[in-house]
Image 1 (tube, rainbow, N blue to C red):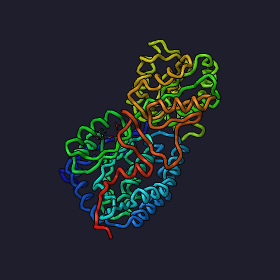
Image 2: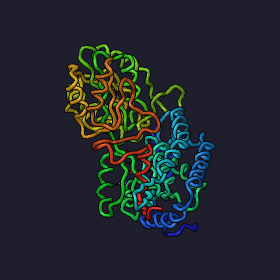
Image 3: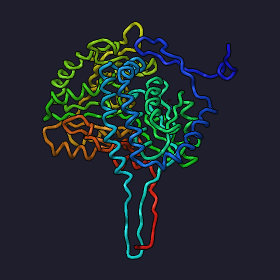
Image 4: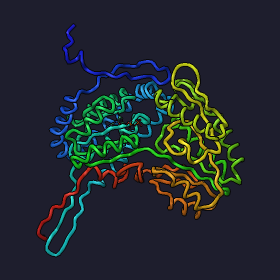
Length: 465
Ligand code: ADP
């Protein structure tokens, strides 16, 4: 044995397969000293990286993304194994996020363009400097997509990054970090593995900014910890998104959206549809359309052909869903489909439809993050629709279906959330910012403006020439 005492005492954590509960790998967790060292190395590397021309930084990142593409099969298998989503969805996650990187880089180039302001006796150039070292802390639900969303603008603007993926998807995080890092100078991107305690140490360390995607509670903790050093923040948190269906809507289109976006990724999406308000006059018809569609959502191992939903990511996640559904039924909701925890291995849960769900239930108030379609009725009044949609501290997304586009736009303008879909799902065109309003976030991601948050403007003034 040549193990040193340090390696013998090093903490580890288990990477579990949510379809079986089996251990895929034991991962070494970063020690407090390694967190400090990672940030120190990233800080030392930042000086040269920040001075590297943008085009060179961008080509390094593009080469890294190409390397990811070359390992796409292994990556998709790893995502499905660690996180559970169907293999086809894992493949789509890889293609959609890697193919978006060149667009992001074009936006970053625009974000970094200096502005020149002139007066009679002076000329001022407003340039954008990197912030320094960014801590990127990410969740497990899009284990490749979410990190790409943070790492690319953080690095392209000239920061170095210490990246901690979720402890539920460490191998996916490691592949991403390996592919990017091999095309970047040493220590420009440093990987740390570990759970929330490592995340907390990283936030408290000598970083300049924390870029985070995850739960609202963790976001609040990060904000608190960052206040001591007035560290910059971008936080993308959870949601409790409503979908409002007025009686004059295309009900089939609304049902398609409701089912797909309640169940996609086994409901584990920050902008999932979590609450559905249907005008009472069409509620029976709408329930039937939803049921018919939801029955097609077969769950099972993500490696199985024809499966649309994998397991929930963890036992803890399933426990929360089970509790919410049981409390809803006990509280008077009608269970139209699912609702039974299957026996056997893995953290599976079936597509579940609840109707007549009242406002006071946990399933109406707390983020569910599970495959639950939650239906309530309302009287069709526009003000009431807005009141219901806004009856949450969250403000991520919302969806409105109506045959009257003016009404749809009026309601969309009054809902307090970052993005609203009118007669379609809320996802905007590329280039639009991704905004968590109210308690769904702080700052925002994507878009020229969003990328600027990874920089600080500096004015340099000269006498007029
Ligand atoms: P989710 O369950 O949606 O992943 P979390 O907020 O629990 O949401 O986790 C998101 C990321 O935040 C993970 O990488 C996790 O390890 C990390 N994390 C958890 N707690 C903390 C904390 N106190 N400080 C920093 N990071 C944390």
